[in-house]
Image (spheres, rainbow, N blue to C red):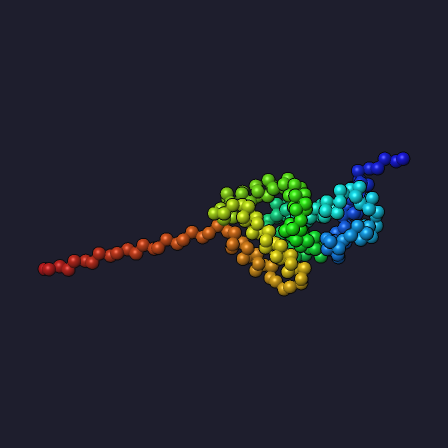
Length: 204
């Protein structure tokens, strides 16, 4: 029997993820049954779950792909480009992003798996935010975690607008975002008014 190469394994895994993303986008997490995953990937459940422990594990991998995609853009090009990239995102990727936020609220197993996987990327993101706080690009009167949560909340809200095809001005949104996370402007010092002493009139 010929040896299965790593390239073949990686290609099969990517094929499963592509099909699963379509299924989750069309039916949502609950509606993406194993039968529908089989149909979307063209593979048997045995083949699918040879690579992934269960459906939750499969969805965690899709969620991590999306998270890493935006993390990479942020590290390489900054927050503005990460936001702009979301506006051009494929609807299937958007659906995974939105479903991820839903599962974070009520699926403890998903949260545990996702946070365990995401922990590896936190040091790089922390360093990115803290460096910009240190060089005065970002405000430092709140922690980097709070800035991260704030920007993530806006990113998720933007995903809903894009998915719903609601009109928005991304450049105006970015100006508001950058104003919110920029260092507070130093208060202007009142200008000193020179007082001119009156010239004493000569009594002569």
